[in-house]
Amino acid sequence: MDRRSDECLLGESSRQDPYDDPESPFISTFRAQSMPSAKGRIQPLKTLCKVLAAVSLLSFAVVLLKPLAYLDTEEAPTYSAAFHSQSYVQGPPTQRFRDNLRNDTQYITSWISAGWTNDVMTYGNLIYLALITERIPIIAKFTPSHVDNSAPPFAFGDIIDIPRLSQAIGSPVIEWHEVKDSKSEVLDDIGCWSVWESVQKLDPNPRGSPSLNWLRLDVSWTRTPDWVKLTPPGIEDNHASFWSLATLGFPETRSTSLELTNHPSPQHQVSLPPDNQLLCFDYLYYVGAQNAWEWESDYSPAWRFVGQHMHWNASLERLADEHARRAMNVPVNEPTPPYISIHMRHGDFRNYCNDLPLDQCFASLPAIARRVAEVQEDLRTKKGIEVTQVIMTSDERDPEWWSGVRALGWTWVDYASERTEEIYGKWYPVFIDAVIQSNGAGFVGTRGSTMTTLARRRVESWRDGPTRIVQWGSPNADDH
Image 1: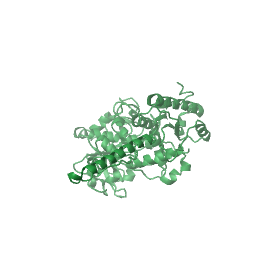
Image 2: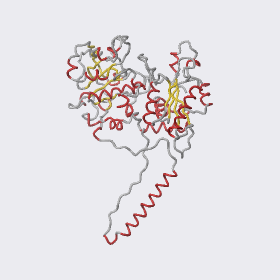
Image 3: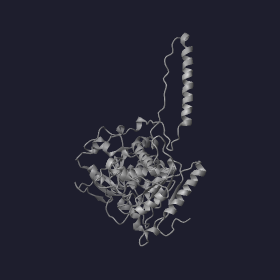
Image 4: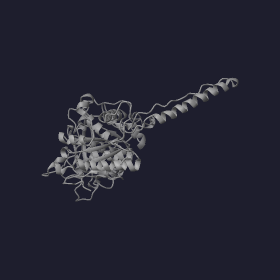
């Protein structure tokens, strides 16, 4: 597999910190016919009883004879019209974003500046902040920071099932291209809060984002107060507090915080206070409620109230399932079997090995196999299922390593032979890997990887599956 690094090492603060809805089954429905006069009712009633009896027997036979698919299908969900995004803007996308905002509605937005997985978490934080400030989040497209700069931005709703998310969290979620015309050449002025300046000391500027260029926004930044920092002064950490940031969305705290450092907008050179109707922050990846790196913790409010409800778009789910089935050589007429998904990140993690040989720095395949065996045993004893299929996802490029994976009887998606990028686009190998990881009956991942963090959370929440994390960084680090 020849794949770029997909996400960042937890704890790193570099500006380059990188990277289910199955189809509903067919359900027969019957419509009662109008009954004739009382005199002629008995015969049709007998006929109806015979039909219903036959249908019942047939349905029972289908249940007995049909193979059980691992990824159970559900009835097509219905979503409340109350959360339809078009109800929260004036109408179709406009040349200027402000012309499409409703006067009776308050909004919140922020932008991304890392790899795709971190950006997913950033948007999870943004939506959680929207919930506690009672504002409507506006989500920008994902930008190709770790795919290929030639790849176009990718809409949030083309990956995440927004109607399902909105229904689950009880709040609408809208996208920037629904507010402002993506082809607009109008450069909009807006004032926003700069969190980045307050939580770290290495960079005296607001955190930039390529999204601002795509959206044609000229931002005047105001530094947030130092008290937004989650950790006490003197502790080197880049996290801000959710509730400290939330207070800036309310009149009293906002009014007493406007005299801080303000940067004129770079192009129009206009100095503006942070917008009141569209509350905006430069960067929300480093935000927590109680501690740093909370997506690692089971209590994480951003995960519990938002992240776990960010299910995949149904079309992406189907595409990933097709790739997984071909990797496992599943016959067309058979259901997708349960499998254990693995994510082993090596790529740029080798930079953290320093002078240690890579075969001593990274966990060996036998060590990974031991973790897989633990997950298999958990599935056997707790769920009563025997899972033999294993799908590896990794950015490792060494052919000998992949030969070792094959020798273990495991498989992977060969995106080159699938021509996935050629057919669907350069984003898709990363997307499909993430979906395959989340659909595992169990999961084994890499310590320090945010892609592993989200895969682990999804398998535990969506599949009630066992997970393990492989340690690395020193010889025999995963011995236990």
